[in-house]
Length: 215
Image (cartoon, rainbow, N blue to C red; front, side, top):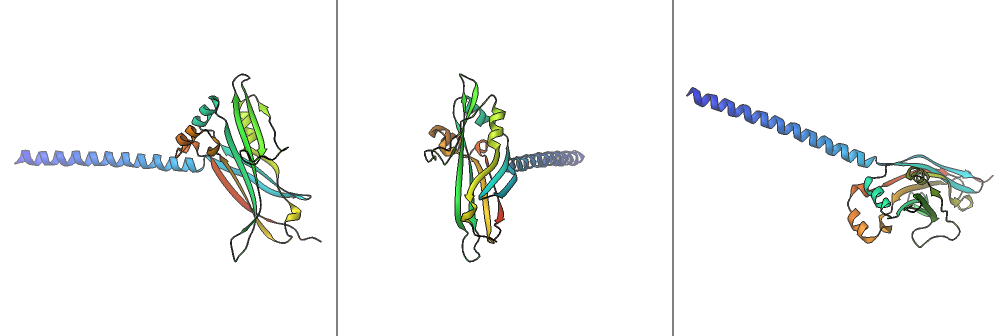
């Protein structure tokens, strides 16, 4: 009989140790998942967002913070251009209906690596894809990827609308967004990037603006 009691006690201890170990592993897994979600959520941020009026123009300035994922950098080094898109819109707030969009502008920043010169070329234009406004394109080159990304991350005094198009004393909402535009990738890369968090570079913010009434 003593032998049976001893075996039961040993079995109980083994089960308890196994359960404790499983619970610890589960806690570690949950912590890693939560940390991964939080890291993904803060991977791309917009800071120093400012909307100002300079004479007859409404200007937007912002700083975008993100780390370029290794998958995106590898694709760039293989000669695949990447397009980063910023968009700003001005909406008039209406309590009785949806906000009315008064203006919307886009800027496409196409980054490509040139193996022969080992330089990074950045094409900055208004509009998306083929919808590019003539005369609004810039094509600077950079020695390093860091320098090119610094230019992409910094939005300085970007005109989004004429002040004359806005009514004085009215509150407006100014939305700003930044993203890596996967739709401009070659089709095989679009399929491969679909659902992959490494390719998910998106951020957005907004603020209010009130134009002083005319005197």
